[in-house]
Length: 254
Image (cartoon, rainbow, N blue to C red; front, top):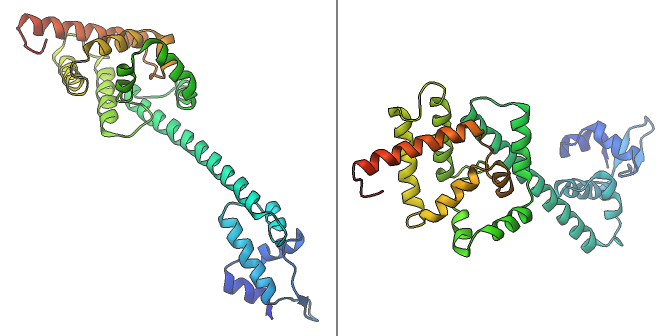
C-alpha cells in the first residue's frame, strides 16, 4: 500500500489531481490511515494507469469512468473517439491553412486589416464542394488538372512561395514605380518565365485564369487570393507593356 504522496512521486501525477479524481468519483483510495492519509493498493494503481492511458488517447474525464467498467462497449467507444480525433485534426488543418494564408497575405500586402483577415479566413475554410462545382462549370478536364498546379496562399510549397514573393514585390514596387519601370518589368519577366515553365502549351488556360482573376466574384468562387482592383489593373498594365516590348524585339517566346 502506498500513501498518496508516494503515488504522486512514482507516477508524476500531483496530489491535487489524485484528490480531484476521488472528488469526481474516478479513483478512490483503498483506505485511509488513522491520520487521514489516503492509501492506494495494486488495483488502484492499475486503474490510475488506465486513466492516464485513456487521457493520452484524448478521452475526457467524464468519458473515462464508464470505460473503466469491463462491460463497456470498447469498440463503439474507440470508433467515437477516432471520429472525434479526426474531426479535431480537420479543425487544426483549417487553422493551419488560415494562419499560413495570413502569413502570406502579410508578405503580399505588408500589413493586415480586419477586412482582409476575414477574407483570408473565409478563403481558408471555403467548402471544397462549392469550389469544385464552380470549376466544373467553366473548365475542361485538362484545365482542372492544371488548376491543381496553381500557387496557393494557404500552402508552403516552393512553387507557391515564389509566386507569393513575386506578387509581394510587385505590390511594394507599385507604391513608387510605374508599370513600365525596369524594377517592375524584371518581376513581370520572372512571372512570364515561371508561367512558361509550369504551363507550357496551355496559354488559353492562363488567359482564362487571368480573366477570372480580374473578376472579384469569380475569383472568390474559385478560391483565389483577393487582390485589390487597382493592383490587378497595375499588373495588367505591366504585362501589356512587357508583351508589347518583347513582340517589338521579335522575342521567339512571344
